[in-house]
Image 1 (cartoon, rainbow, N blue to C red):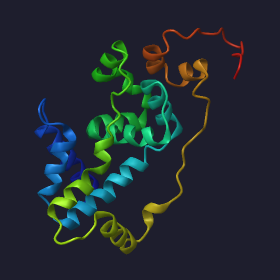
Image 2 (image 1 turned 135 degrees about the vertical axis):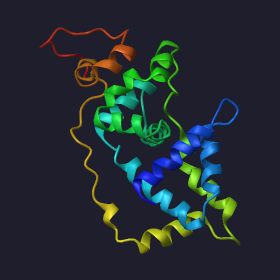
Image 3 (image 1 turned 180 degrees about the horizontal axis):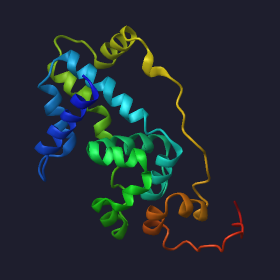
Image 4 (image 1 turned 90 degrees about the horizontal axis):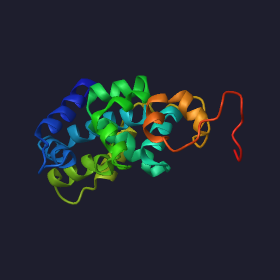
Amino acid sequence: MDTSEFWAVIEAARSAAGPDRPFADALVDELASRTEDEILRYQERFDEVHDALYRWDVWAAAYLIGGGCSDDSFMDFRAGLIALGRDWYERVAACPDSLAEHPAVIAAAGAYDDDVVFYEDVNYAASAAFRRVVRGDRDFYDAWDEYAASRDGSGQDSVHMGEDFDFDDPDEMRRRLPGLAALHLLDTPHLPPGEASSGA
């Protein structure tokens, strides 16, 4: 499964989702219509696009939207970005602050909803689909380990997260993510340029 096929799966699930059918359920159904090998290939591409967002600037966006963000929550946030579809994924990959323009993010900020974008179940769609189609007692994670071991390992490069910075420094967050900061740091005093924040 190449990248275009991966995103076709995501878009098919997005089209099938609705008020009574969450995206994660639609994604599991879409994957369960495929073979075991296709599900494993989907997981390979999922890990690739998921890992590509493991960056400090994307994490900072999650931190603002979620009012904080642990490592586990950042996994869910990146899964949620994938669930938004290819267009939004690529916009955020290019500029995390573009999320300040997403209608759901704007609405959630006004409602003080810090769960928007975070989508844990999307991380486990392949394993849920695999359980539906597998024959016998074959476990998804055992199958995945075998599959991954058979690959050339090209996807195992070290992660480059970019420049680290202080998520608790409101002026730094305003500088790097001005749109999201405007939505989420309304009650935080803004210091004049050159004046250091205390307690950092």
